Amino acid sequence: MSSTSKDMFLPTSKDEMVRLGWDQADIIIFSGDAYVDHPSFGAAVIGRTLQKAGYKVAIVPQPNWRDDLRDFRKLGKPRLFFGVSAGAMDSMVNHYTANKRLRHDDAYTPGGKHGMRPDYPTIVYSSILKELYPDVPVIAGGIEASLRRVSHYDYWQDRLRPSILSDCKADMLIYGMGERTIVELAKKLENGISIQEIKEVPQTVFFSDETPSSEDIILSSYEKCLKDKRLQSLNFRHVEEESNKYKGKIIWQYTSGKWIKINPMYPPMTEEEIDATFDLPYTRMPHPRYKGKEIPAYNMIRHSVCLHRGCFGGCAFCTISAHQGKFIASRSKASILKEVENIVRMDDFKGYISDLGGPSANMYKLGGINKNICMKCVKPSCLHPSVCHNLDTDHTPLIDIYRSVDSMPGIKKSFVGSGVRYDLCMHVAKDAAVNMINRQYMEELIRNHVSGRLKVAPEHTSENVLDIMRKPSFSLFRKFKCIFDNVNDKYKLNQQLIPYFISSHPGCREEDMAELACITKNLNFRLEQVQDFTPTPMTVATEIYYSGIHPYTGEKVYTARSDRQKLEQRQFFFWYKPDAKAGIINSLKKIHRPDLIEQLYPFKRGTVRRGKR
Image (cartoon, rainbow, N blue to C red; front, side, top):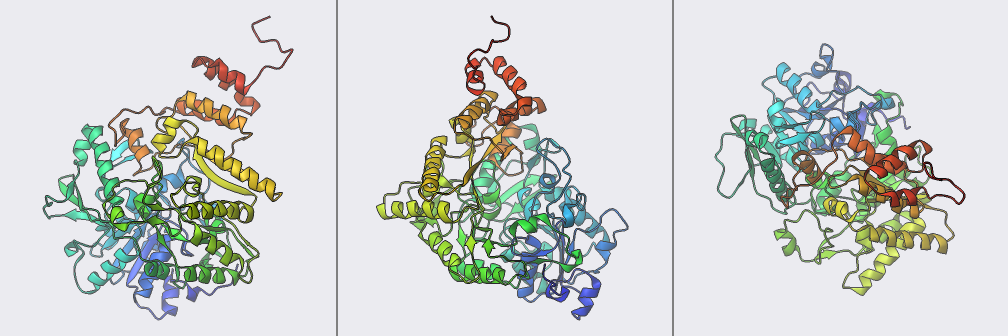
């Protein structure tokens, strides 16, 4: 690790502020994550963005909320406002497994140490700050606040909760990617406008004394949703559709006797705007205060490059589009190559870029052919139930990035570590030239950018489950596997295809998991990358889990909810383990599928079946 000077970072202590000649910070950001000065860490991005706009910004990472609150006092009162973020993950996902068991580590903490942030830091931090400094505005942001901006189901408490604004003391919430919003707010506060007077800034959420317009979206109140789960389900559909529009409407929800106003998102960032975010003077290092302790999340991305923001996949269990939007904002080639040059200069760089990717690895520079059609579209996915006829799927710009990076001095090889949407690069377009380019892309990817293992996410094998997930048919994965195997054979490569699967997803029954086990066994997979479905706020799948109803069809959907039901599904991932065999056989007998027992555990000649001669 480089011995980067503390003065190159945003200050985290009074001593660092004094060395910079500051008597007072303009803005102080409290974060549940360690301070890593890197474009993948939200506090650094917001801090550097405000710094570029001319403000003095300090960061208090992982403050101690259990003691006399000295961490909340040590930098004093900011001139403009406090910013609060739980970190790069929802704190409950960070703290607990899908089975609600406490995790033993935290990837965003030095040494991976657990317990350095509370449950719901957005609520805890903002409440402390308001008690200590009641006259200073508190602005909440980050994933946790963003995805809890309206009434939402909380899996860990197993109850419907109101907008997080009802539970925390923040004056305002910013949702989504917050660079433009936070600068606009800072300017208004700088000009003497009180936080209560700021009403129209995009991507802000606050209690309002205004009256909703007839053109706005008015959700069912939190109190009504508590009594009728169907209303919560319908609310979600409105929120998702407005979040995925190019120009959404204002949304209102009545909660605890007050109106919450949710201003629509900004349009997608222009290339110039997203370049400006990534071109800020990050050190790309953890703050020296950690004295060389490893931060696992940083180790994963330290030599990686994010090419774009946004995702138009619309997967039912994913929150990316709810936070980043479905329209892709891509960086310029010059900005990407500039970041690669910065990585090459890092002391610990050995010549390998770990990931040229993004929320989805291969959506760089993709979008609608006719933008006017996109302007009117409310669909949450451009890929499901089929690839949109208006979607440009030409992977030429991405191939150019791969080859340009690999030709740079100091680069031995670049890899793609993000998940690849094979349905996107395999789509048969009307333009034969695009189809040829995309075949070249797949060969380029598999031949030159796989670090031994390529991650893809079919997620399931059942057509019904995949439809609810908004994922393509498993038959497409089979075709992609053939392409992968053929390229490996052609170039004599020994690489693995690593598929990701989810159990207990809404719509998935025990029988579906048994068939998944048989299908993947026949494809010679022994699954490693698997997980139980975890309901997280603001996804279609979570709303189904909570209400039992699909928000778009109104139909009832089965979901495994009990620990026993989830375990019975999960066990099929591990059919090859001796200690799983008895349980699987008993389960298959119970659902009357002896044919699947035979497929998973075929009887060998000469074997006497127990109970029969």
